[in-house]
Image (cartoon, rainbow, N blue to C red; front, top):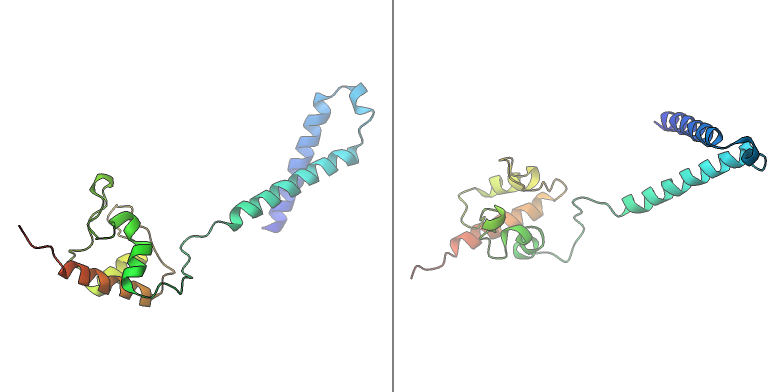
Length: 152
């Protein structure tokens, strides 16, 4: 891959230099050297590479390094509540279903947590979430569902 990048990179540099030379007349080329054109192209590539590295270093999907979250409720509040609300009733205006009164087994909840919902909804996948954390969330959901509010 590095060879392909280097090859395409040098072709790109050559095209840039050819374009610059084509756009300049003979008088403006007197002070320019071909070597300086290459330096400009190399510095630009280095700058773009550094910017990409900085921007992409902040991108991380699904990090699970939070030892302070130990209970199912804490894990639910961190991972699930932004969409399903703290009480598990869901946000119906956005199409997020409730997850507190679920008939799913603990294993099925763990599976949905790892694989996403798979039913054309926007439930994200938490592949790197340890099974232990997913199980704590599932058990908390079952407890949350058993605490139904009494009818008036």
